[in-house]
Image (tube, rainbow, N blue to C red; front, side):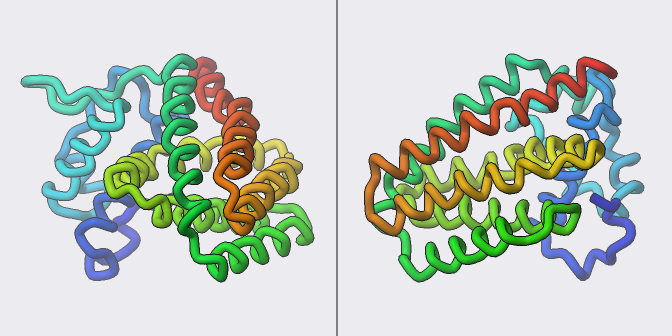
Length: 235
């Protein structure tokens, strides 16, 4: 993700600016560009992203809530060490939240929206694998999980998924970056099949099948997410 200094403040509303900053910092942490124990200085970050101190402070608070940054008295924000256990625990929480969300969505999701996402998944599976397909795979993944979140029927669950969305997506995108470095694109087909199983269960209004499909999807992603901790351990 490019630094925000390349884009004028007018192009972002307040929330989007904060989210973009959070995403950029998370990506740097998971790639090992920002190391454990490193202090995140508000002034330096404001200069990097070309924004005022306010969205930086809000971004650091959000990072503290995600467990990636410790907010310490008299020291400010300090990056925590992300371990394999941390990754496993994030996945455990994600599985609980996503499975409960898809259970509710199976009863409520708009069939037309589900079909539209399914068509995008099918087109992706049929397309030539490569960097452009990875970009599309991320967009389709966002669309499906956002649809499930919005259709879950539980406001608190929806807010928790929304709160953790940036963390989940940063993990996912870093694993894709690592695979693209190896020109390994087989995951596109694997995830397409998993996503289609989820959309089929949603269209069938079958909560049990939806939970099974989501469970399989989350479990399948474990090996990819573990690459994040392995990548950090090498630095």
